[in-house]
Length: 589
Image (cartoon, rainbow, N blue to C red; front, top):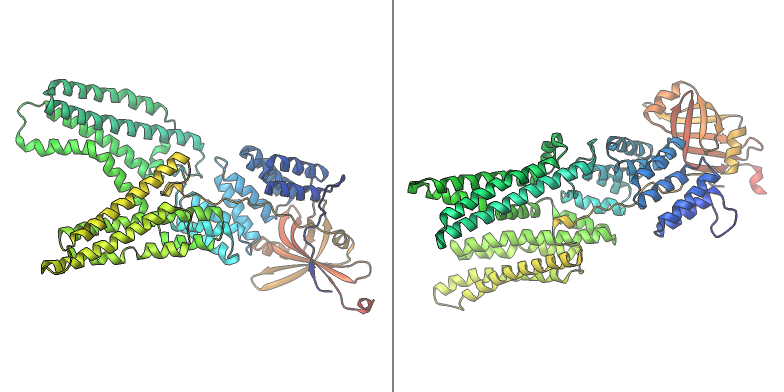
């Protein structure tokens, strides 16, 4: 007969005496049904029946993770690796949970790299390495890993969805913290909140005080009193700064936090600049007989204090909109299929493309009105990438997005028509182009109104909004697949075979050596082989072990797996088991 795979076996159904693998099957079923607490109980039953079942410990770890008990998920994952050191699934499960454990990020990367080394033909290890790179902001590394995963499995949903995020240069909600830092992310989170609160309070106080002082002095002739109030606010800023500074307990990490999250650094620096400008503005105001040449300086300082915050917000919005490559990201989201995360991110990406288009149309139309109306004809080409992306994405879940897209297209057409009609109108021929300009500018305003309405609806309902912060990472469970079991006939063959052959590869090609083998209770093979094979296996641990039926020699067995050195033996964790018959007269029976 032809070689056939003897993958996982196990009956399903409610039977009183289940085996360990049947309890593992049940645990996986409960996990997929969204019942992690019940799945944890089933996995524990499996481990009690067979303490060497590494699959049971992987399922226990995954159940703890689903329940939000990351600290409890680590020990069973480590136990699974101890039981099957060559299991790429166990390495992947441990990497998945260690990345959530403060101070163990490097270990997570090491286990993920081992999983890729043990199973280079699988997509999941590449996806895990891509996730680890993406979480650290290494978008180039993440893109490379996701493309390698898609080369192995073109339909992998997580690889496709997260590749779109890498193309968008996505950052997680806490970009100030590097997961590889040994410090607890809660400590850096508290530091970030303290810095943000100080910068927000400082900028708001000095801006409001500047306006109040100016209004009091100009309209109510309360100049002296207003200046005194301004200095009082300046003094009030000192205890506010001290209060927030005490909440920062990781000052040594603050510079690195600014590098990881530049906008946090910009917010803090802008707040300091606003306070200094406010102080200088107050001092110039109390100086007697100030020359008129200082009037622009005085007005400029007030402008920095009052308009600096809105200007910074506008710059950040534009910078976020023009970050990454949204059109290729849309294509990856479309290819990811019906994955819910990919669909959500596609909608947010379409809003990003719309904001980009709007930000190009506004200066183009303004420049055309100010310099040369005929230049507005170029507006016809601006919405093309947006419309093409919208049609290819086939996203119909957001009516306000459709309305805003139509309004932007209408604005481009109307402004282009206004530019063309302006030439004819100069000769008093044709309709008045003013109506076309009004329609175009009105459509631009209406598109922003649709954006504001969509943002307000998201805020009211607590759902994803039309902005980059609503992008989410696809994080499917990893390391839950069944382990490869050795059937009874395979165990018997290796236990009593007269000769066993170990096949491995080195720089010169495939090699074979004789070996002696035994089967452990956990389903691993323990081999004693010639020393020449050890160095080659250390470089490439993928091996195949062959044995023949020791009784009648009618069939042969091949176990493909990962070999790792353990003291004076090689431990082989099975990845695939093949059984075949030798040709002979017995096949006629």
